[in-house]
Amino acid sequence: MEDLDFITTLAYFLNVGVFSAVISRFSGAPISILVCCAVLYVGATPLETIGIMLTYLVFMRLTIYTQKNRVNFKKMEVFPGWKIIPAIALILISLILYPFAGLAIFLLVFMAEVLAKMRMKIPEERRMEKGELMPYIIGGAVLMTLSMVAVKFIPETLYYGLGGFVILALCAFFWWVGNDRDRLASVWDKVILAAFIPAGLYGFDMADWIDDLKRNVNPTRLAYNLPFVFLPVFFIAFLMANILFGIFSLSGMVIVFFSAIGLRIFGYYEMSGKGKTNLIAVGITVLVALLLFLTAPIPIGITHTVDAFLKQNQYGFTGLLNMF
Image (cartoon, rainbow, N blue to C red; front, top):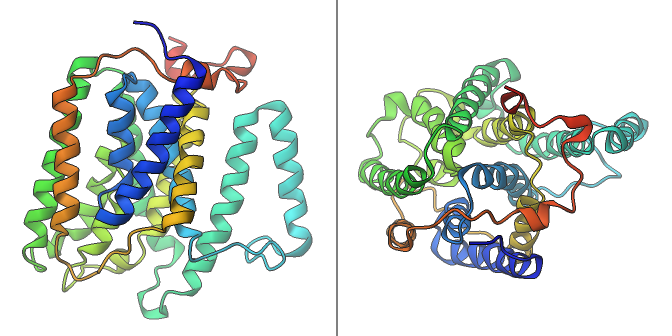
């Protein structure tokens, strides 16, 4: 079976991005799971899938956070006034030498500004310092990177089936936890870190469900500081995908663009924060997993025609793990 042509691929990405945003908005189902399954349905290979999803996670998470934390370039927090000039110069130079690096630096600057605005809105008694957050960021980044590397060694047919089982397991777990706000309260921080394993394998972002199911008593303040762990970890995984596999997914950015359109038009689902599982969200997510089993995808490759427009593999670099 041949690769999809450019127009067909672009039209499919439009449907994936917009309809995933709409379904997520009105059901509460994780938008990342909807997108991942959609690209698997049509025949994305495992490495294509994780390349798309790691790009999607960091860009989409930023888009979600900027819904209520708009960056005013006249009132920057981390790079006020002239301090933004060296960053802009570095971005422009990097775009010429190694485009991915330019994009990564831009993301880093934008991410720093968004998180700075979000940090100011957190009550001081719940705010975690950088030193307190670093162990969680490092731990999450290691788990997510190792999970991403594992994708290279998982057979394609097993990867698709395993994805469905992972989704069902996540739904069962969050339903079980949501039935009792004291359940697993003593190890809730470890539950949060464990969420980076499915994120590395498939790009499943469970941050919203975790945030919705805060425990009555949390062992630390981490439950109130999730953006300051999830976004940096997603960014690091995005970098590692390029360093290890040479991944620079224009397809992922295209889907983000279409999802952002849906997000701007219809908004984003607001979690109740009551600690109870949203059964509609779980039901839709289970249905998506069952469809993955029923479609039995055949890997044909879906990103080549779109990603061909983006300069990749500069200077022959295809990723450290592809050099051996």
